[in-house]
Length: 248
Image 1 (cartoon, rainbow, N blue to C red):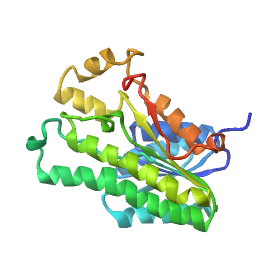
Image 2: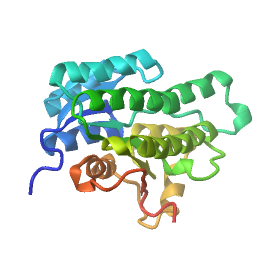
Image 3: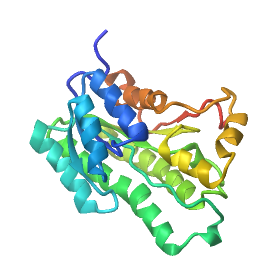
Image 4: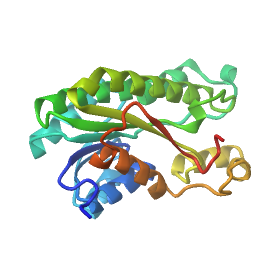
């Protein structure tokens, strides 16, 4: 069987660690040519070396930086076929009235406006080069219901679902598919930070998960790879739960 992403040029945000780094390793093994983007150059350089990829330092809170990252991809490879908008930041866990406006604005700027900016830049690049393509955004099961511990994070992830659906309707006629994945308990640095701030969070989430455990980031990356690939050619506007049954 052909490799899942054979010869596709893929732009990945949040590629320095967690799900993004796992995606880089998987996508490279599946034949993709990669441009990795994140804020921390040392992490990016390490993943790029491991995956024979190129990288660009990119701040999702800065729309100009996002556009520059996508433009760099086209300059390096000549086209853009697909993008995985995975980059995000968390928030200090706690109730709404305990979160500063500055922290809320930062979560919004990265998790929502950053995805908006990325989709716009990626659609422009796909339209001008490959002519058809696929985009996957990383949402979260925390965006499907009220999230009293992470209200700003949950709100932005629910908005990402709406952006995904709107983009799928808008760009489907151009053969550009847009989907999202909604991970559950995934053993990333972000989740470990939450568990340190609120000890027992991971154990509590695992107790509510039918599969009884958290996911390795590589398991979540598998879902993104399939949605980006031509094997998902009739799937658009979907928000795919990758949560071990947590949301059931």
